[in-house]
Length: 199
Ligand code: 6PG
Image (cartoon, rainbow, N blue to C red; front, side):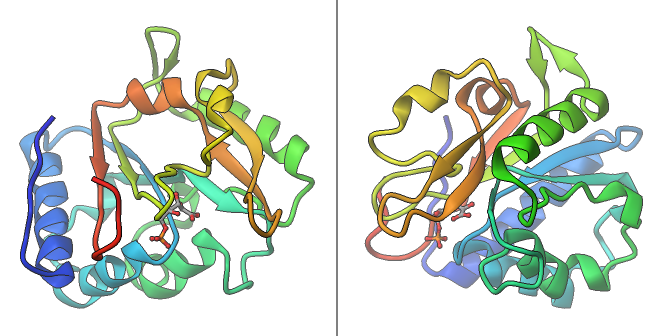
């Protein structure tokens, strides 16, 4: 594991964007299956990416998936897909067919199954699990990642690629990637900013 620390959220976000571009440039013939997280932390990064790094990013070699989604429609302010679409995807030349959103508006249990199946079809399998090229994670103040919260650790070892979880405070349903596919990715990168985040 490598830990990189930067003096500010802006510098951290810029460093991550540049690292992602570097990783993709190291393999110029590869199409990258990238799963992203949501929440507040990547807002700044997505905004900087759209405003400062549009030209140097190989958009045509990126296929975007989500690590987790809140069970709300895409136009809801809580939607992880909606946030990234508004700040970044909607302004890039990335093709619509290369963006695989989790349908937050669908019935959660059915959607966890549908999205697991979609990932099964789209992402190459290795060691019995999909092998994403890059998984971008965040961490909540309570230490959760994906949408697997303290007390829900059994979901980490689920045999499903995605499961339904619930936010412990407000009960909001989530669709969340489980532990084995996360561990199976070629690059797993946590973006953590702010003073009260766990390390
Ligand atoms: C989500 C996320 C989640 C996030 C952490 C951190 O939908 O909430 O994908 O895993 O990374 O909750 O969230 P903040 O960046 O809002 O603190």
